[in-house]
Length: 248
Image (cartoon, rainbow, N blue to C red; front, side, top):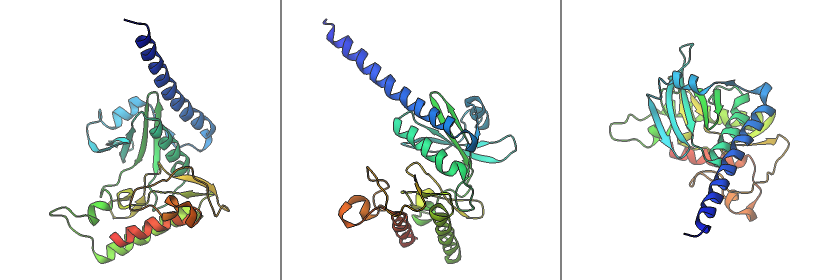
């Protein structure tokens, strides 16, 4: 057996470790730079205790898994355990950088987080009525929303988006407005959620620069695909919201 194969394997292991370590370093560097503005930081052992050993799995996806948990105060929370990819490391930074510092009735609250190598978690207020897509794309036996409730939800989502664009020190562009990312509390108050693709920009920037298309097919504004039809701005979120309204 030649020495070539073991060397290749060793090199690939080295590259994998460098890639993952750099992701952890990026996250930790970001947290150190934002220390004053951070939500509560929890240890992994505290996360395990909140979830009773990750006993109640609410959902799973490419990002990782979401578990139901309970704080010492008795408040229920949803805990998103992120996968170990570099993309999920960037999602973690995006979420903490955006909703980690704001409060609004129509934006889901980020209560805390865990950053303990190799684990990253985000802790949100618990939304007992799941997400809007469950009521738009009804399964058999599902109960549709009333016209009044549909109007209230639509207005609430619009208020949340307006706050992100105009109510903060920096404008927050979501880039993934869709029914799945609109959560509903016990009173069906809508909350914009999932800021993994979000970007922060100065409030006086009307045209923005992006290196890649962001969002979910069917909800992405045309200017994100075709650069020759206009610059990217907050209107990309407005376009996605318009598609959501059509589906409601």
